[in-house]
Length: 253
Length: 219
Image 1: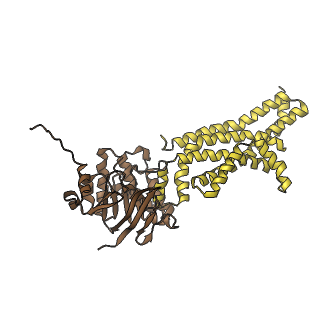
Image 2: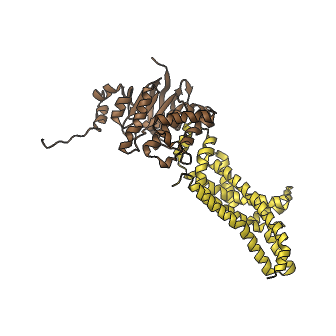
Image 3: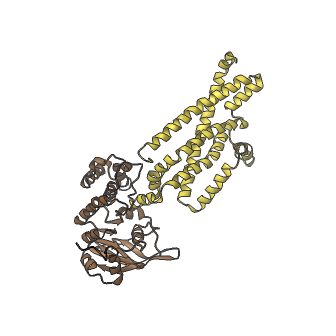
Protein backbone atom coordinates (compact mmCIF):
# COMPACT_ATOMS: atom_id res chain seq x y z
CA UNK A 1 0.00 0.00 0.00
CA UNK A 2 1.31 3.46 -0.93
CA UNK A 3 2.48 5.87 1.71
CA UNK A 4 -0.02 8.16 3.43
CA UNK A 5 0.33 11.74 2.15
CA UNK A 6 -2.23 13.15 4.50
CA UNK A 7 -3.43 11.74 7.76
CA UNK A 8 -6.18 13.26 9.82
CA UNK A 9 -6.80 11.73 13.21
CA UNK A 10 -9.63 12.46 15.62
CA UNK A 11 -10.25 15.91 14.15
CA UNK A 12 -12.80 18.04 15.95
CA UNK A 13 -13.88 21.42 14.66
CA UNK A 14 -16.24 23.74 16.48
CA UNK A 15 -17.54 27.20 15.70
CA UNK A 16 -18.34 28.67 19.12
CA UNK A 17 -20.56 25.98 20.61
CA UNK A 18 -21.60 24.42 17.32
CA UNK A 19 -19.69 21.27 16.47
CA UNK A 20 -19.04 20.93 12.74
CA UNK A 21 -16.74 17.90 12.68
CA UNK A 22 -16.25 15.44 15.48
CA UNK A 23 -13.56 12.81 15.97
CA UNK A 24 -12.99 12.51 12.24
CA UNK A 25 -10.12 10.37 10.96
CA UNK A 26 -9.03 10.01 7.37
CA UNK A 27 -5.93 8.92 5.49
CA UNK A 28 -5.15 9.81 1.92
CA UNK A 29 -2.47 7.80 0.20
CA UNK A 30 -0.08 8.80 -2.56
CA UNK A 31 -1.89 9.07 -5.88
CA UNK A 32 -5.30 8.54 -4.38
CA UNK A 33 -8.37 10.52 -5.36
CA UNK A 34 -10.81 10.90 -2.49
CA UNK A 35 -14.17 12.45 -3.21
CA UNK A 36 -16.19 13.85 -0.34
CA UNK A 37 -19.92 14.16 -0.76
CA UNK A 38 -22.71 15.06 1.61
CA UNK A 39 -25.60 17.44 1.99
CA UNK A 40 -25.05 21.20 2.19
CA UNK A 41 -23.63 22.37 5.48
CA UNK A 42 -22.32 18.97 6.54
CA UNK A 43 -18.81 20.33 6.94
CA UNK A 44 -17.18 19.24 3.67
CA UNK A 45 -15.71 22.65 2.93
CA UNK A 46 -14.76 23.17 6.56
CA UNK A 47 -12.80 19.92 6.45
CA UNK A 48 -10.81 21.14 3.44
CA UNK A 49 -10.23 24.49 5.11
CA UNK A 50 -8.92 22.72 8.22
CA UNK A 51 -6.44 20.77 6.12
CA UNK A 52 -4.54 23.89 5.11
CA UNK A 53 -5.17 25.61 8.42
CA UNK A 54 -7.51 28.27 7.13
CA UNK A 55 -9.56 27.14 10.13
CA UNK A 56 -8.14 26.34 13.53
CA UNK A 57 -9.14 23.02 15.02
CA UNK A 58 -10.33 22.15 18.51
CA UNK A 59 -9.15 18.58 18.69
CA UNK A 60 -7.10 15.92 16.96
CA UNK A 61 -4.32 16.54 14.48
CA UNK A 62 -3.63 16.79 10.79
CA UNK A 63 -0.32 15.70 9.32
CA UNK A 64 1.11 16.13 5.84
CA UNK A 65 3.75 13.42 5.37
CA UNK A 66 4.23 13.42 9.11
CA UNK A 67 4.49 17.21 9.48
CA UNK A 68 1.96 18.62 11.87
CA UNK A 69 -0.26 21.25 10.30
CA UNK A 70 -1.16 23.81 12.88
CA UNK A 71 -2.26 27.41 13.06
CA UNK A 72 0.57 28.43 15.32
CA UNK A 73 3.44 26.66 13.62
CA UNK A 74 6.09 28.90 12.10
CA UNK A 75 6.45 26.68 9.06
CA UNK A 76 2.80 26.98 8.07
CA UNK A 77 3.51 28.91 4.83
CA UNK A 78 5.97 26.21 3.74
CA UNK A 79 3.45 23.47 4.48
CA UNK A 80 0.74 25.34 2.62
CA UNK A 81 2.98 25.45 -0.44
CA UNK A 82 2.62 21.67 -0.51
CA UNK A 83 -1.18 21.82 -0.31
CA UNK A 84 -2.87 23.18 -3.40
CA UNK A 85 -6.34 24.58 -2.92
CA UNK A 86 -8.90 25.54 -5.54
CA UNK A 87 -11.90 27.56 -4.37
CA UNK A 88 -15.49 27.64 -5.49
CA UNK A 89 -15.27 31.24 -6.70
CA UNK A 90 -11.78 30.92 -8.27
CA UNK A 91 -10.29 33.73 -6.16
CA UNK A 92 -7.89 34.85 -8.85
CA UNK A 93 -6.17 38.10 -7.94
CA UNK A 94 -8.02 40.73 -9.98
CA UNK A 95 -5.07 43.16 -10.08
CA UNK A 96 -2.76 40.66 -11.76
CA UNK A 97 -2.83 39.16 -15.23
CA UNK A 98 -3.37 35.43 -15.67
CA UNK A 99 0.36 34.81 -15.92
CA UNK A 100 1.18 37.06 -12.94
CA UNK A 101 -1.47 35.24 -10.91
CA UNK A 102 0.34 31.99 -11.59
CA UNK A 103 3.87 33.35 -11.08
CA UNK A 104 3.29 35.22 -7.82
CA UNK A 105 3.56 32.38 -5.33
CA UNK A 106 6.40 30.32 -6.88
CA UNK A 107 8.55 33.39 -7.47
CA UNK A 108 7.94 34.94 -4.05
CA UNK A 109 7.93 31.85 -1.87
CA UNK A 110 9.97 29.19 -3.63
CA UNK A 111 12.56 31.62 -4.97
CA UNK A 112 12.44 29.94 -8.34
CA UNK A 113 13.68 31.93 -11.30
CA UNK A 114 11.00 33.89 -13.08
CA UNK A 115 12.05 32.64 -16.50
CA UNK A 116 11.92 29.03 -15.38
CA UNK A 117 8.49 29.33 -13.77
CA UNK A 118 7.19 31.32 -16.68
CA UNK A 119 7.99 28.50 -19.08
CA UNK A 120 6.29 25.98 -16.84
CA UNK A 121 3.27 28.26 -16.42
CA UNK A 122 2.87 28.62 -20.17
CA UNK A 123 3.18 24.86 -20.63
CA UNK A 124 0.51 24.26 -17.98
CA UNK A 125 -1.74 26.92 -19.49
CA UNK A 126 -1.38 25.21 -22.84
CA UNK A 127 -2.43 21.93 -21.29
CA UNK A 128 -5.66 23.44 -20.01
CA UNK A 129 -6.18 25.22 -23.35
CA UNK A 130 -5.53 28.76 -22.15
CA UNK A 131 -2.08 29.61 -23.46
CA UNK A 132 -3.36 32.56 -25.44
CA UNK A 133 -4.95 34.01 -22.29
CA UNK A 134 -1.64 34.38 -20.43
CA UNK A 135 -1.70 38.16 -20.62
CA UNK A 136 -5.44 38.59 -20.12
CA UNK A 137 -6.96 39.99 -16.95
CA UNK A 138 -9.14 37.71 -14.82
CA UNK A 139 -12.20 39.85 -15.50
CA UNK A 140 -11.86 39.08 -19.21
CA UNK A 141 -12.26 35.34 -18.65
CA UNK A 142 -15.34 33.17 -18.33
CA UNK A 143 -15.95 31.31 -15.09
CA UNK A 144 -14.67 28.06 -16.53
CA UNK A 145 -11.52 29.72 -17.79
CA UNK A 146 -10.92 31.40 -14.43
CA UNK A 147 -11.23 28.09 -12.68
CA UNK A 148 -8.77 26.43 -15.03
CA UNK A 149 -6.31 29.25 -14.32
CA UNK A 150 -6.88 28.73 -10.59
CA UNK A 151 -6.02 25.05 -11.04
CA UNK A 152 -2.82 25.93 -12.89
CA UNK A 153 -1.96 28.41 -10.14
CA UNK A 154 -2.24 25.61 -7.60
CA UNK A 155 -0.35 23.10 -9.78
CA UNK A 156 2.68 25.27 -10.38
CA UNK A 157 3.60 24.98 -6.70
CA UNK A 158 4.06 21.20 -7.22
CA UNK A 159 1.83 20.41 -4.27
CA UNK A 160 1.82 17.04 -2.57
CA UNK A 161 -1.95 17.12 -2.46
CA UNK A 162 -4.67 19.12 -4.18
CA UNK A 163 -7.90 20.20 -2.53
CA UNK A 164 -10.89 21.08 -4.67
CA UNK A 165 -13.72 22.85 -2.89
CA UNK A 166 -16.88 22.61 -5.02
CA UNK A 167 -14.95 24.04 -7.94
CA UNK A 168 -17.85 23.84 -10.37
CA UNK A 169 -20.63 25.02 -8.07
CA UNK A 170 -20.44 28.61 -9.33
CA UNK A 171 -20.21 27.70 -13.00
CA UNK A 172 -22.78 27.70 -15.74
CA UNK A 173 -23.59 24.12 -16.77
CA UNK A 174 -21.83 24.34 -20.12
CA UNK A 175 -18.57 25.32 -18.40
CA UNK A 176 -18.59 22.55 -15.82
CA UNK A 177 -17.27 20.01 -18.27
CA UNK A 178 -14.11 21.92 -19.26
CA UNK A 179 -13.09 22.19 -15.61
CA UNK A 180 -13.92 18.61 -14.66
CA UNK A 181 -12.01 17.31 -17.69
CA UNK A 182 -8.91 19.01 -16.35
CA UNK A 183 -9.37 17.37 -12.96
CA UNK A 184 -9.95 13.92 -14.44
CA UNK A 185 -6.77 14.44 -16.40
CA UNK A 186 -4.87 15.24 -13.21
CA UNK A 187 -6.24 12.09 -11.61
CA UNK A 188 -4.91 10.10 -14.55
CA UNK A 189 -1.47 11.60 -13.95
CA UNK A 190 -1.56 10.16 -10.46
CA UNK A 191 -2.02 13.38 -8.50
CA UNK A 192 -3.20 13.01 -4.93
CA UNK A 193 -6.46 14.86 -4.47
CA UNK A 194 -9.39 15.49 -2.19
CA UNK A 195 -12.43 16.68 -4.06
CA UNK A 196 -15.61 18.08 -2.60
CA UNK A 197 -18.33 18.06 -5.22
CA UNK A 198 -22.02 17.78 -5.97
CA UNK A 199 -21.40 16.38 -9.45
CA UNK A 200 -22.22 12.73 -8.89
CA UNK A 201 -21.28 11.34 -12.29
CA UNK A 202 -17.95 13.11 -12.04
CA UNK A 203 -17.47 11.77 -8.52
CA UNK A 204 -18.14 8.26 -9.72
CA UNK A 205 -15.69 8.60 -12.60
CA UNK A 206 -12.80 10.27 -10.83
CA UNK A 207 -12.87 8.80 -7.33
CA UNK A 208 -10.79 5.96 -5.96
CA UNK A 209 -12.74 6.29 -2.77
CA UNK A 210 -15.97 8.09 -1.90
CA UNK A 211 -16.68 9.47 1.51
CA UNK A 212 -20.11 10.50 2.69
CA UNK A 213 -19.89 13.15 5.36
CA UNK A 214 -23.00 13.49 7.49
CA UNK A 215 -23.73 14.38 11.09
CA UNK A 216 -20.23 15.72 11.77
CA UNK A 217 -18.48 12.48 10.81
CA UNK A 218 -17.67 10.03 8.04
CA UNK A 219 -20.81 8.02 7.63
CA UNK A 220 -19.85 5.84 4.72
CA UNK A 221 -16.61 5.16 2.95
CA UNK A 222 -16.29 2.90 -0.05
CA UNK A 223 -15.19 2.58 -3.64
CA UNK A 224 -17.41 4.48 -6.08
CA UNK A 225 -19.09 1.40 -7.59
CA UNK A 226 -20.21 0.15 -4.19
CA UNK A 227 -21.24 3.60 -3.05
CA UNK A 228 -23.47 4.28 -6.03
CA UNK A 229 -24.88 0.79 -6.58
CA UNK A 230 -25.01 -0.68 -3.10
CA UNK A 231 -24.86 2.03 -0.43
CA UNK A 232 -24.66 0.52 3.01
CA UNK A 233 -26.44 3.06 5.13
CA UNK A 234 -29.95 4.43 4.97
CA UNK A 235 -28.55 8.00 4.95
CA UNK A 236 -26.42 7.21 1.90
CA UNK A 237 -29.46 5.86 0.06
CA UNK A 238 -31.44 8.93 1.02
CA UNK A 239 -28.59 11.20 -0.09
CA UNK A 240 -28.32 9.48 -3.47
CA UNK A 241 -32.07 9.70 -3.97
CA UNK A 242 -31.85 13.51 -3.86
CA UNK A 243 -30.17 13.32 -7.28
CA UNK A 244 -32.96 11.30 -8.86
CA UNK A 245 -36.14 12.59 -10.34
CA UNK A 246 -39.27 10.57 -10.95
CA UNK A 247 -42.66 11.46 -12.32
CA UNK A 248 -45.46 9.37 -11.02
CA UNK A 249 -47.83 9.74 -13.94
CA UNK A 250 -46.02 9.92 -17.19
CA UNK A 251 -48.15 9.78 -20.34
CA UNK A 252 -47.77 6.45 -22.12
CA UNK A 253 -46.07 6.87 -25.46
CA UNK B 1 -2.45 96.03 -8.62
CA UNK B 2 1.20 96.99 -8.48
CA UNK B 3 2.94 94.61 -10.89
CA UNK B 4 6.36 96.05 -10.19
CA UNK B 5 5.90 95.20 -6.52
CA UNK B 6 4.67 91.71 -7.37
CA UNK B 7 7.73 91.13 -9.47
CA UNK B 8 9.98 92.34 -6.69
CA UNK B 9 8.55 89.93 -4.12
CA UNK B 10 8.30 86.90 -6.45
CA UNK B 11 11.59 85.37 -5.20
CA UNK B 12 10.30 85.73 -1.64
CA UNK B 13 7.10 83.85 -2.52
CA UNK B 14 9.10 81.34 -4.49
CA UNK B 15 11.13 80.53 -1.40
CA UNK B 16 7.98 80.36 0.72
CA UNK B 17 6.23 78.11 -1.82
CA UNK B 18 9.25 75.82 -1.83
CA UNK B 19 9.07 75.58 1.96
CA UNK B 20 5.33 74.82 1.86
CA UNK B 21 5.87 72.17 -0.80
CA UNK B 22 8.88 70.67 0.97
CA UNK B 23 7.42 70.44 4.45
CA UNK B 24 4.00 69.47 3.08
CA UNK B 25 5.41 66.64 0.97
CA UNK B 26 7.58 65.33 3.79
CA UNK B 27 4.67 65.46 6.24
CA UNK B 28 2.31 63.74 3.80
CA UNK B 29 4.79 60.98 3.02
CA UNK B 30 5.28 60.34 6.74
CA UNK B 31 1.52 60.45 7.23
CA UNK B 32 1.00 57.88 4.48
CA UNK B 33 3.63 55.61 6.01
CA UNK B 34 2.03 55.97 9.44
CA UNK B 35 -1.39 55.25 7.96
CA UNK B 36 -0.09 52.17 6.18
CA UNK B 37 1.50 50.75 9.33
CA UNK B 38 -1.61 51.48 11.39
CA UNK B 39 -3.90 49.92 8.79
CA UNK B 40 -1.67 46.82 8.79
CA UNK B 41 -1.78 46.66 12.60
CA UNK B 42 -5.57 46.80 12.49
CA UNK B 43 -5.77 44.25 9.68
CA UNK B 44 -3.48 41.76 11.43
CA UNK B 45 -5.31 42.31 14.73
CA UNK B 46 -2.02 42.77 16.57
CA UNK B 47 -3.29 42.73 20.17
CA UNK B 48 -1.96 45.84 21.92
CA UNK B 49 -0.89 47.79 18.86
CA UNK B 50 -4.42 47.68 17.54
CA UNK B 51 -5.79 49.47 20.63
CA UNK B 52 -3.02 52.05 20.52
CA UNK B 53 -3.76 52.65 16.85
CA UNK B 54 -7.44 53.22 17.53
CA UNK B 55 -6.62 55.71 20.30
CA UNK B 56 -4.10 57.48 18.07
CA UNK B 57 -6.57 57.83 15.20
CA UNK B 58 -9.16 59.43 17.49
CA UNK B 59 -6.60 61.74 19.08
CA UNK B 60 -5.09 62.90 15.81
CA UNK B 61 -8.36 63.47 14.02
CA UNK B 62 -10.16 65.18 16.87
CA UNK B 63 -7.60 67.85 17.72
CA UNK B 64 -6.79 70.79 15.45
CA UNK B 65 -3.40 70.89 13.74
CA UNK B 66 -2.70 74.26 15.32
CA UNK B 67 -3.08 72.77 18.79
CA UNK B 68 -0.89 69.81 17.83
CA UNK B 69 1.79 72.18 16.52
CA UNK B 70 1.69 74.28 19.69
CA UNK B 71 2.02 71.13 21.72
CA UNK B 72 5.08 70.02 19.76
CA UNK B 73 6.65 73.48 19.48
CA UNK B 74 5.99 74.92 22.94
CA UNK B 75 5.06 71.88 24.99
CA UNK B 76 7.73 69.30 24.17
CA UNK B 77 10.72 71.57 24.94
CA UNK B 78 9.36 71.81 28.51
CA UNK B 79 10.13 68.11 28.92
CA UNK B 80 13.46 68.49 27.19
CA UNK B 81 12.57 67.63 23.59
CA UNK B 82 13.56 70.50 21.33
CA UNK B 83 12.37 70.68 17.75
CA UNK B 84 13.24 73.20 15.07
CA UNK B 85 10.26 74.82 13.36
CA UNK B 86 10.53 72.84 10.14
CA UNK B 87 10.74 69.46 11.89
CA UNK B 88 7.88 70.56 14.11
CA UNK B 89 5.70 71.33 11.10
CA UNK B 90 6.52 68.05 9.40
CA UNK B 91 5.90 65.98 12.54
CA UNK B 92 2.65 67.83 13.26
CA UNK B 93 1.39 67.24 9.74
CA UNK B 94 2.42 63.59 9.89
CA UNK B 95 0.65 63.18 13.22
CA UNK B 96 -2.59 64.70 11.95
CA UNK B 97 -2.38 63.08 8.52
CA UNK B 98 -1.51 59.67 9.93
CA UNK B 99 -4.96 59.42 11.47
CA UNK B 100 -6.72 60.35 8.25
CA UNK B 101 -4.48 58.08 6.18
CA UNK B 102 -5.13 55.17 8.54
CA UNK B 103 -8.84 55.51 7.93
CA UNK B 104 -8.36 55.80 4.16
CA UNK B 105 -6.22 52.67 3.98
CA UNK B 106 -8.29 50.75 6.51
CA UNK B 107 -11.46 51.20 4.48
CA UNK B 108 -9.64 49.94 1.40
CA UNK B 109 -8.14 46.94 3.16
CA UNK B 110 -11.48 46.02 4.67
CA UNK B 111 -13.15 46.17 1.27
CA UNK B 112 -10.91 43.40 -0.08
CA UNK B 113 -12.72 40.11 0.29
CA UNK B 114 -11.34 37.95 3.08
CA UNK B 115 -11.19 34.91 0.83
CA UNK B 116 -8.68 36.73 -1.37
CA UNK B 117 -6.37 36.68 1.61
CA UNK B 118 -7.11 33.00 2.23
CA UNK B 119 -6.43 32.25 -1.40
CA UNK B 120 -3.00 33.88 -1.14
CA UNK B 121 -2.22 32.20 2.18
CA UNK B 122 -3.19 28.82 0.79
CA UNK B 123 -0.61 29.30 -1.96
CA UNK B 124 2.01 29.49 0.77
CA UNK B 125 2.55 33.23 0.89
CA UNK B 126 3.35 34.60 4.34
CA UNK B 127 0.95 37.04 5.95
CA UNK B 128 3.29 39.88 5.08
CA UNK B 129 3.65 38.81 1.44
CA UNK B 130 -0.11 38.42 1.23
CA UNK B 131 -0.63 41.94 2.53
CA UNK B 132 2.00 43.43 0.24
CA UNK B 133 1.22 41.62 -3.00
CA UNK B 134 -2.47 40.77 -2.80
CA UNK B 135 -4.35 42.97 -0.35
CA UNK B 136 -2.54 46.27 -0.65
CA UNK B 137 -2.72 46.65 -4.44
CA UNK B 138 -6.45 45.99 -4.38
CA UNK B 139 -6.95 48.21 -1.35
CA UNK B 140 -4.97 51.00 -3.01
CA UNK B 141 -7.43 51.19 -5.87
CA UNK B 142 -10.30 51.49 -3.42
CA UNK B 143 -8.50 53.94 -1.14
CA UNK B 144 -7.15 56.15 -3.92
CA UNK B 145 -9.92 58.80 -3.88
CA UNK B 146 -9.82 59.12 -0.08
CA UNK B 147 -6.02 59.16 -0.16
CA UNK B 148 -5.91 61.96 -2.72
CA UNK B 149 -8.49 63.98 -0.79
CA UNK B 150 -6.23 63.64 2.26
CA UNK B 151 -3.15 64.71 0.32
CA UNK B 152 -4.84 67.88 -0.87
CA UNK B 153 -6.35 68.55 2.56
CA UNK B 154 -2.97 68.10 4.27
CA UNK B 155 -1.14 70.28 1.78
CA UNK B 156 -3.60 73.07 2.56
CA UNK B 157 -3.23 72.48 6.29
CA UNK B 158 0.40 73.61 6.00
CA UNK B 159 -1.00 77.15 6.06
CA UNK B 160 -1.07 77.03 9.87
CA UNK B 161 2.68 76.38 9.98
CA UNK B 162 3.15 80.15 10.19
CA UNK B 163 2.01 79.90 13.82
CA UNK B 164 5.27 78.17 14.71
CA UNK B 165 7.32 80.78 12.83
CA UNK B 166 7.82 78.75 9.67
CA UNK B 167 8.21 81.18 6.78
CA UNK B 168 5.74 79.50 4.50
CA UNK B 169 3.36 81.16 2.01
CA UNK B 170 0.86 82.22 4.66
CA UNK B 171 3.61 83.70 6.84
CA UNK B 172 5.09 85.62 3.94
CA UNK B 173 1.76 87.07 2.84
CA UNK B 174 0.83 88.13 6.39
CA UNK B 175 4.28 89.63 6.77
CA UNK B 176 3.96 91.66 3.60
CA UNK B 177 0.52 92.88 4.58
CA UNK B 178 1.69 93.84 8.05
CA UNK B 179 4.84 95.57 6.90
CA UNK B 180 3.73 97.32 3.70
CA UNK B 181 -0.09 97.16 3.63
CA UNK B 182 0.14 95.32 0.29
CA UNK B 183 -3.11 93.52 0.98
CA UNK B 184 -4.43 93.07 -2.59
CA UNK B 185 -1.13 91.98 -4.09
CA UNK B 186 -0.32 89.70 -1.15
CA UNK B 187 -3.65 87.91 -1.26
CA UNK B 188 -3.38 87.59 -5.03
CA UNK B 189 0.06 86.04 -4.73
CA UNK B 190 -1.07 83.80 -1.88
CA UNK B 191 -4.02 82.35 -3.78
CA UNK B 192 -1.93 82.05 -6.94
CA UNK B 193 0.85 80.18 -5.19
CA UNK B 194 -1.49 77.71 -3.50
CA UNK B 195 -3.29 77.04 -6.76
CA UNK B 196 0.02 76.50 -8.46
CA UNK B 197 0.89 73.81 -5.94
CA UNK B 198 -2.51 72.20 -5.51
CA UNK B 199 -3.97 72.17 -9.02
CA UNK B 200 -1.26 69.93 -10.49
CA UNK B 201 -1.55 67.73 -7.40
CA UNK B 202 -5.28 67.43 -7.91
CA UNK B 203 -4.90 66.65 -11.60
CA UNK B 204 -2.19 64.11 -10.87
CA UNK B 205 -4.54 62.46 -8.39
CA UNK B 206 -7.37 62.23 -10.90
CA UNK B 207 -5.02 60.74 -13.47
CA UNK B 208 -3.68 58.23 -10.98
CA UNK B 209 -7.15 57.18 -9.82
CA UNK B 210 -8.23 56.65 -13.40
CA UNK B 211 -5.13 54.58 -14.11
CA UNK B 212 -5.78 52.39 -11.10
CA UNK B 213 -9.37 51.87 -12.15
CA UNK B 214 -8.33 50.93 -15.67
CA UNK B 215 -5.47 48.72 -14.62
CA UNK B 216 -7.60 45.76 -15.59
CA UNK B 217 -9.64 45.32 -12.47
CA UNK B 218 -12.49 47.02 -10.71
CA UNK B 219 -14.81 47.25 -13.68
